[in-house]
Amino acid sequence: MTPEQVLQGVFGYRSFRPGQREIIEAVLAGRDCVGVMPTGGGKSLTYQIPARVLGGTALVVSPLISLMKDQVDAATSVGLRATFLNSSLAADERRARVEAVRRGEYELVYAAPEGLEAGTGAALAGVKLSLIAVDEAHCISQWGHDFRPAYRNLKGLKDRFDAPVLALTATATPHVTGDIVAQLAMREPLSVRGSFFRPNLRLSAYLKTGERSAPRPGTVNDTRSSLLRLVRARAGESGIVYCLSRRSVESTAEFLCSRGVKALAYHAGLPAPERERVQDAFKRDDADVIVATVAFGMGIDKPDVRFVIHRDMPRSIEAYAQEVGRAGRDGAPSDCVLLFSWADVIGYERLTGDLEPALADWHRGRAREMFRLAERRACRHQSLSRALGEEIAPCGSSCDACAGLDPVEAAPAVAAKRASYGTRAAEPGAPAAAVPPLFLKLKALRKRLADARRVPAYMVFNDATLLAMAASRPSDEDGMRAVPGMGPKKWAEYGEIFLAALREG
Image (cartoon, helix red, strand yellow):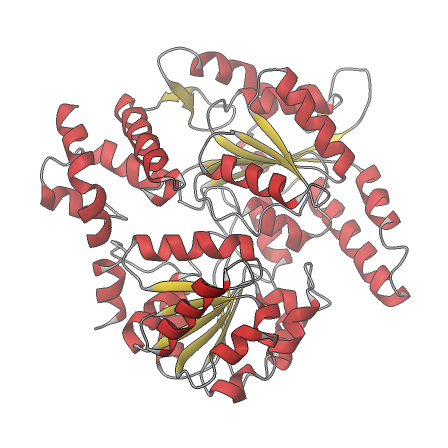
């Protein structure tokens, strides 16, 4: 079986995204590889496809227990044999899964780095691993933006299991990439950097002035009202609002709720059951907006997030790239609006007081670098890509600098048009374009099916697949199977149901 056959026969896609083929070929050849690909660039396929082609068992190191079940459910939904081993399992269930892993019943086994130091590592003893994939590999570096000490203990995995190592991350500077290679004891790895340019993300930025006079172009003087206008213009769509502090998260969520927005707060100070409840509500489309600190994001694998708004400036360019990358992972148009000020920089500098001097200086420099990027009136995509080591031409139409987009100014008109005959903005600041009524019908059907099966709606089909159905209106099995994202398992579970809805019109 070839990678192309798995891509189409299992996942229902006809072509690879940039960087995927090179990584897959390296892994199949037994070579270590570092893959730096943007969020939404299809990183999971770079280890899922080799796992099916190579046979045996692939180990996937994932940083969050809360993410593993979603990852396994998503893999299982397309027909892959996957499981996870972590501390959330009861003893009997864990024992049964370990025995199944040793019998070779799973293609993919997900585990946390902490678990590999303890019971999970012992459970895998004697298992022949075809591949070791380390997701969110920047967590291994203290110079990365999300350092996790447990990742440092992954160094012996390669020698222990004698398998190729694939390290994956959405953002890594050359310094961080070098640290990843050293810490994982990789041997002459191939380095593959996918393009950071995602034209479906429409980037814009506003300086928060706090002035009482009318705002100048590119500024806002009332953060709350601007935020509310942006969210109301996207009513019924999934979005994330990032804030600097827990207090800001709670006050912003309360404000949005008081104005009729289905918003929930999320930060690390909440009890674990409450964090889980908020995540589940968002994944099941029971809440439209999550207001959060950066604690929210890595554990969410939701492809139909239609907007990301930064109420406060991110702490670094890499963090910004990660956070905006959580929008539009299904390839459909999505908005990313940044509100920033020098006060945000000062806020981050206060947080570095307990760090050793060199690391504190480094973090302060990164916050100032992010401010300079935000205030630069040049192509947003070009500036972001350049900061991450990639040269691209100006985007032309996917940012405020190139296209003259002004989502805050356009928000009331967009909201008014959305309120009559099911419309939404094709571009911020541009006339609203009709959302096909058939798409809304398919989306409602998807929600009913997902609720009945107690799974997130996107695990039935993502928005991009529903939009493709609504656009092509297939009338038979062959037409449905040609829709991107319609693999054989999806067809068997949902194809006939959606085909019946399409035939009804």
